[in-house]
Image 1 (tube, rainbow, N blue to C red):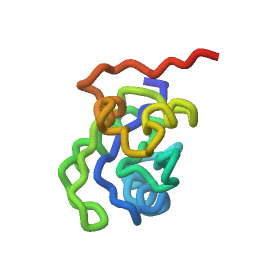
Image 2: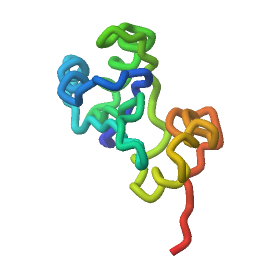
Image 3: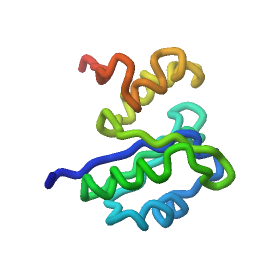
Image 4: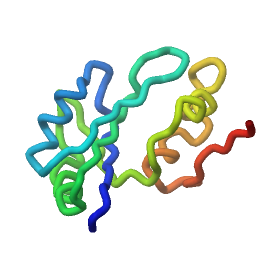
Length: 124
């Protein structure tokens, strides 16, 4: 399993810091990256984060231990991420021109699986 693996942590709340997530998830293994997407229009953090591990077993352990657990006062859902990080253009398309369309256009399933599972394509 030489390839890095990401987990998706849902329901993290507005005041969650990258350092809080990193500190919590590092106890399972080496964390390569922590990413909290921002809504393109509102500039507010989305209610989920990606945690990238170097080792699959560490990511699996974190997923199994933290799923449906309390983190920063909220019950979080943890799943294996199904897609790579979105670009700013892709996020703008998902969020919609008024900033509220993300969850109506597939929202959650675009990030955690179970839905369409297709990346948004843009013409240049």
